[in-house]
Amino acid sequence: MSAKNHKQWKIPAFEQGDYVDSRIYSDQNIFDEEQDKIFKQVWIPVCHESELPEAYDFRTTSIAKEPIIVVRGKDNEVRAFLNVCPHRGMRIERRTAGSFSDGQPSGNPKHMTCMFHAWQFDMKGNCVDIPRAKEGYQDRLTKENVGLRRLRCEVRFGGFVWVTLNDKVEQDLEAWADGAFECIRSAIDTEPLEVFHYHKAIIDSNYKLWHDTNSEFYHDYMHYHNRVTGFNDEYFARTNKGFKNGHVNVNSFTVQYGEFELGESREDLSFPGFPPNQWYMIDLFPGMNFNLRGSALRCDIVTPLGPNKVMIEFRGLGLKSDSQKDRKTRIEHHNSIWGPFGRNLHEDLLGITGQGASMQTGSEPRRILHGRHENNLIHDEIGMRHFYDEWSKWMGRNPSDPMDEQRKVLAAE
Image (tube, rainbow, N blue to C red; front, side, top):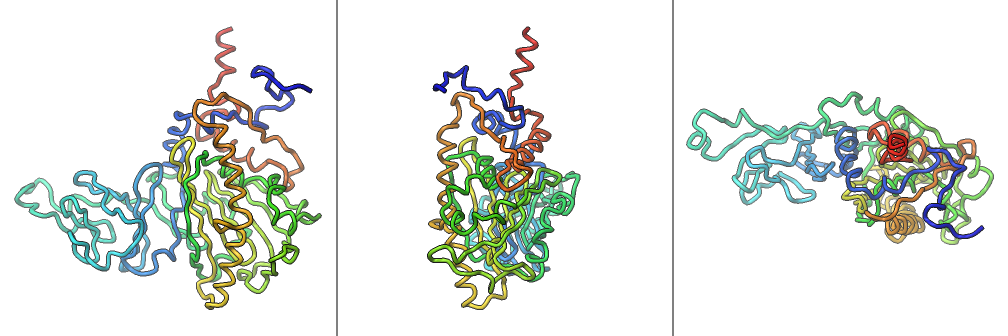
């Protein structure tokens, strides 16, 4: 076989669904549509409740370019709002996290204050003060007339905080997840969890390429740690299970951590009711990942920044009740795999940055294969096919032919 020119570089034996067009990763219009048609419509995990431990604590983030603030009220309720003042559209809080217990230079304690004109809001989003309101607005506007833009918010599945920009979202969070969390539900819901590790990275790649990497295990050949601790009959017998709304989970097997030169069993720090040294992974549409590996829960939250740029927030979680000794061990277990210099994470990031470099905006279209069929077993690429079936429903585009070129050719003929 010889090298192929552009027209020959096709894979005719594969049907649509077994490959996608690379432009779904690189086209600016497709990216913009995803923000409106998907990210503004569905449930997105934004942080964990342990990052808001006290009343008046807050955390800021964004969804589809909309600034978000999550706060814990005096009543211990976690609420979410657009981080936007209704007066002149100013971003109210610029810090990534903190507390409103103490007053800011331009505001009072226990209130969110817009630094621009000192409008103040309580933890329920009510406007509590407009400076010189009577003088400026007479009776045309009072503090009772305005407030922050409230967002639907739920705390669920191990204490994660979920937000949607869609006031009319058809499914509550439980229905949206469709049972994908049941494989680890008791392990993460029996005791309160706590974030013990956080870092983020901005990667020159499309967010879907990161999700693809979490959706398939064929690339485990790239991971030395996984090869030596997991390549056995039990590993290859793992299966992928699809759920409604594009979610997938991968069932477990016993990881042989002792086979790694610096490894040790993690059974003493298993989550409640979780079998020793097991490993379940849950991929949530449109690109979030929950990964329970023995002694640590990892969560990846993606924030797409452009066709070829994504921010990924990595969190490691353990039990809130951990002793200092157990927490230290749990952190070591987590970071040996998923820390910035762990055995797996940097290899995955090298993989998707290599893809990102070859699929930048304007690069020639090419077919990206998702066509491995192995009876839903671990190296079957069903997870990606399931994801892109759902993506197609939301986007109204065929991922194998996103520009609908076949229809255009037929119409021209």
